[in-house]
Amino acid sequence: MNLLTLTEIRRTTQNGPASARVHVQVESATPKLTREQQPYCELTLADACDRMTLRVWSDHPAYKTCSALTSQDFIELTADFYRSQYGLDARKWMVRPLTEQEKNELLQGPADLRAKQTRDFQFVSESITHIADPRLRALGEGFLAEWGDRFRRTAAARSYHHARRGGLVEHTAQMMRVAKAMAPLYPELNLDLLLAGILFHDSGKLWENALPENGFIMNYDELGELMGHISIGLELVNALWRRLSVENADAWNKLTPASEDVRMHLLHLIGAHHGEPEFGSPVAPKTPEAMALHYIDNLDARMEMFSAGYTTAKPLAPRIFDRVRPLPGNLVKSLEKFRQTVIVAESDKLL
Image (cartoon, rainbow, N blue to C red):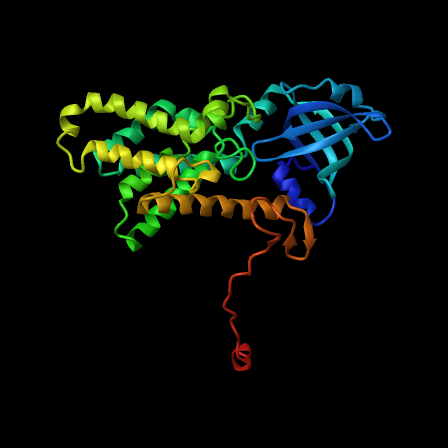
């Protein structure tokens, strides 16, 4: 029986039930009662990119075993997987603990995802290295040197988009690609400032959405809860800036535009990237770079929601899927790209 990821199983079950094995971490094992007051256990299972819920009824042979599981446990679930009204589900299933080697392989994530995130982190690093403004370049390089490992295991969100370990690196890299592609079309944009703003706009999520090295459970952090990622990002940039400005005082004082103006504009990009106060920004975008960052951020997040939604959302009809919030309505599959049809003349067929 094939060993698949949860995402691969979701894709496979779009065409009907599928037998498979999956390696997962137990996120939680919650005792519950049915409407008839019969006990059951609800397992939440997670791998590098996805999660599912498994209900273990009290008459199942593994009920006691599953009820005793904790977030320290990693298991193999072998089952006939199918789509139910509640999402991905399983029947005729059995579980066993993972070996230490299997656990280590699971924690590394799927090979294709690891390769993509490695490329994305390299792209982010190179993009910062090529920033012409030495202040913004030093700020970005200092951040990656000090916080790079944590950055690489942080999710971009808890649920809406790139909600996986390393998702913030993927989101940041794609935003930088979009910024570089559009900059020649809008020459008034300060690309150095925009790239630095993209790197730092969600830097506070290193405390809101960081995942541990030894699991896929996104814990809660008190600093993240009390301050929020925008406030933390502003404080982080200010702290880095103060340190670097002292170390490079003589050189930075001679640069144009003035260093204080650069710092202020970068902070504005972080503070304004949610666009409106009701979405958490203390100020609306008031510069071209701030407006560009806001829309690039939203564009990449929503493209990811569409992509994930086609895999996880409930099918309603051919090419139509249930709504994935905060997208405004049901999802509809994209129109297929035009493909040139080669017409062979009858005379050519005879040759």
